[in-house]
Length: 394
Image (cartoon, rainbow, N blue to C red; front, side, top):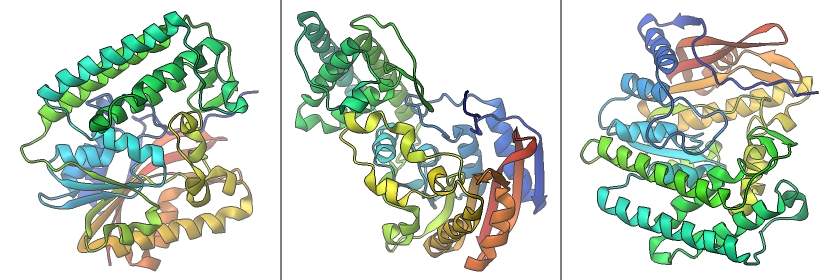
C-alpha cells in the first residue's frame, strides 16, 4: 500500500486574501507569478531538494517587500533559493540552515562562474570523467564509504562506479576547492537517480537495469550543464552584486548568527509541521559526502517523527513561538517578515498555518498585516492551503 503523498508542490490553485489590501495583493501576485513561470532557471534546479521554493515566487516577494541596500535573511534557507534571488536583485543576503548538505549545496548554487573559470571547469569535468571511465574499463577495485545497510540501495557495478567517480573527484587538488565542491554537489545530485531507491521521497527499493559507464556519462553531462547554469547566473547579476553568505545553524540561533547585523527582511519557508522528516530526505547522500546529520536530528523543527500524536500540537506551538521570537530579536527597527508556510499535520489532524501564525505572533511582538493563501490538494477531504504571511514589528 502506497503512503499518501503530502507534498505541497503545485501552484495555480484558488487564492484567498486577507488583511491589508495592498500587501495581500502583493503576496497573491507572488503565487500568480509562480504559477505562470518555470522554476528551472539558473542554478536553482540542478539538484533535487524536496519542498524547494519556486524562484519566481521568491523574486516577486523580494521585489515587493525589500528595498535597495537592505539585508535579506532566510533562516530556513534550504538549497538557497531566497538568498540567490536576493543576489540577483542586487541585495545582500544571509542564508541559515541546520542541514549541512543544504548549506554546502546553497554555497555552490549561489556561486557565479565567469567565462575564464568556465573553461577551466569544463576541462576538469572531462578529465575526471575520462579517469572514471578508465577505472570502469580496468575494473579497478574500490571500496564505497557505505554500511551494508546503505549498500543495499545499489547494484554492485553501480556502487563500484559511484565509488570510483567519488575518488576521482576527491583527487581534485586542494587549490581548486571550489571546483571540487561543485563536482561533489553534482555527484550528490545523481546518487539517488542511480540507486534502487524508488524516488527522492520514497525509500522503497525498486529494481533497475543500468549499464556500466552510464553513471560517469550522466555525471559529465550534469556537471557541464551546471557549469553553464552558473555562468548564466554570473551574466545575469547586476554589477557589484554581493554573493550571499550561508551559515550552518538553527533558526532559533538567528540573533547569535547575525551578531550585530539586523535583518531588514526575513523571508523564509519554515518546516511544515508534521509533514516531513526533513533529515531523512537526503539519507542516501550523507555517507557519500561524509556528512554527520546528528545535530540536525536533535534540533530539526517540525519533524514528523516528533509530531505524530494529537497531543503534540502544544509542542508544535512551542516550536513556532520560539522561531517567531528569534525572528523578532533578529529584525531591524523597521524590519519585516514574510513567511511561506503550509498547513501542519499533527497526529493526523490538519492545523491551518496562517491561523496559527496569527494567534502566536503577537506574543513575541509581531503583528500580522496580510496574507494570501493558495489551495492545495485536500488532506482527508479537508481543504488544505499554502500561505504567504506578512508581519511587521509591533
